Image 1 (cartoon, one colour):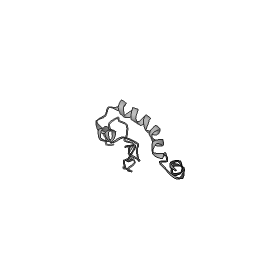
Image 2: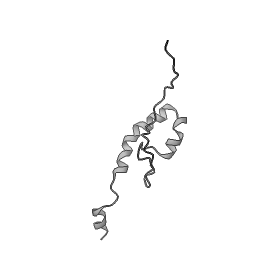
Image 3: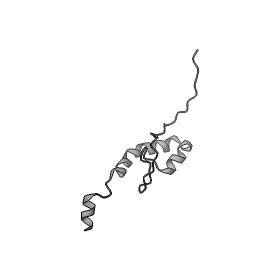
Image 4: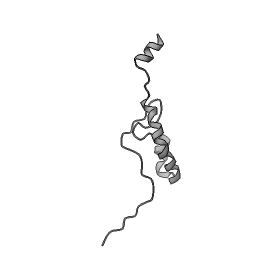
Length: 77
């Protein structure tokens, strides 16, 4: 006899347990969600979650931009 386990048909969270909010972009550096998206995730409808999941890969480059370095210092001189 197998136990029947009730499962909800929902999108899993993209959380990877690296929960650090980027200071200027204001998105999590682990999953790329905003604080608002993270806090509302469990209450969202599946279509809203799906839309966010599709958008997350486009947010990753925002965190990889260089914000300074040698070129930026030379431009200021």
